Amino acid sequence: MQFVSIVHEDPTAEPYDPAEDHIAEWVREGIERGFNVRGDRLRPVAETKTVRRVGGGTLVTDGPFAEVTELIAGYDVLECADLDEAIDYVSRHPMARFGAIELRPVWPLDLQADER
Image (cartoon, rainbow, N blue to C red; front, side):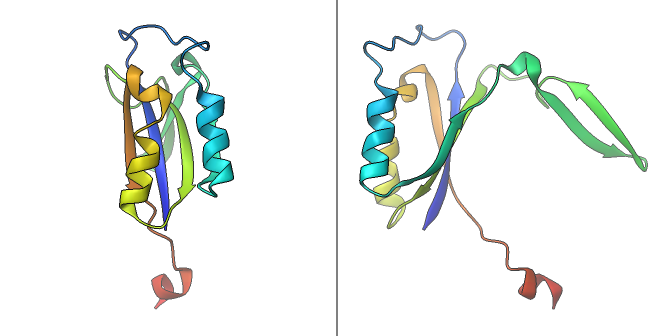
């Protein structure tokens, strides 16, 4: 079963310390256990664009789509046996100390079913 973990970073949290917050070790564990399908950090929010279709046109604005206190800092696509296994793995994500990790099951798109 696939899940997406969305890393929310609280800019008011204590600073990230690579010496203590071993993200590479967490990722390696996920790869070794077959959990990590893909994951990456996201560029700073100052480089974000939000795109909307409005009145038949395209509206592009700077920044995230809403005023938020936590910013999306990264994501991981995980392959786990079930929700409990995904929660167990994500609960050890080092970035959980700096905000929150949102865990969402993937809802696969079935093009054939959608065309019926």
